[in-house]
Length: 317
Image (cartoon, rainbow, N blue to C red; front, side, top):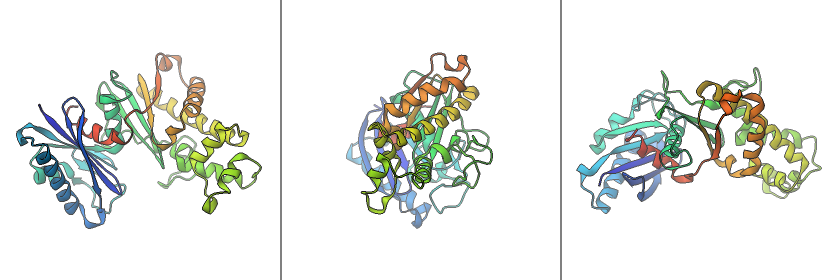
């Protein structure tokens, strides 16, 4: 039996998985990222954790196919991270080489949402499909594109950065500094900003009843969907606004990549049918019939394990 390591590096925690060749997770662990200590310290601790997991399962080193890693930021040739989205580390760092030297294994690295998308293709909602768009709706929007079974990285590793497509020229200011980005409208942050602007002029609604009881009275995207599910017209209108923009943004991608399936994950996707039904109802008016023919729009399946499963899948892709 051959084995794979999958690593998902986040701003706070690093998740590890030891998987067999069939994609079953045999062990998983987590340690703090502590990125402020520098990349050399971080990768040394990763190497130590990998070795501990191998020894715990009594696996011979020759049976380890390698280490896959997902990391926030654009990645060139599954080796070099152009810049780190969450860490104070230098850019153009050959992470695959550095970690390979510390572990003695073959290492492949890719953007975290690219990796999550690949995980859904290998073991999740997109099993059996070779043309896939993955979208993570969270604080921002991440994306991954699989075409003919292969991840699309692009010339500089920025393929799949769908959150920063301009969908409204000179629109809302995004955290990246541009105006009108997709994620400025339909990420959790975008939904919350829209709700706050509307609540400033209308507090006669169920949403205000929910957040007025919270410390700090801070609206969260989940509050919007919860209020909408209870029939609150104010919140239903925000959900309608949100699904309209998601459908618009996705339709652009449909015409560029013509996927068989779109897999949507992240915290916002936990809203469930109220989100997915709205997208499905609206996307047709923005899309050519040929792009809609047979298209599936599905919730992600792997949840918190997506990053380590997808990272391991890099070694098979």
